[in-house]
Image 1 (cartoon, helix red, strand yellow):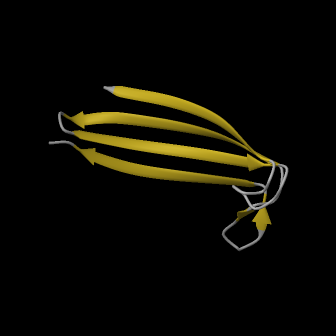
Image 2 (image 1 turned 90 degrees about the vertical axis):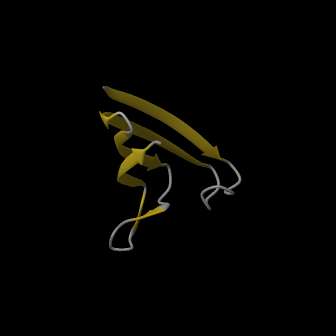
Length: 79
């Protein structure tokens, strides 16, 4: 069996508590796909993209930008 999930979120940080800059909005979209390869083994891949009003994310070179993307691969074994 195979499953796909899409999640969209928006966070508003008027006081700068969450992201360090006041009046900042961050939107994100996450796509998750998973496949059950055996009765007790699940493989899950997730890709996420964030977009902010302000430059709050550091890229690979250390420069600050308003976007970031991440990918994760997970394996779940149940018993």
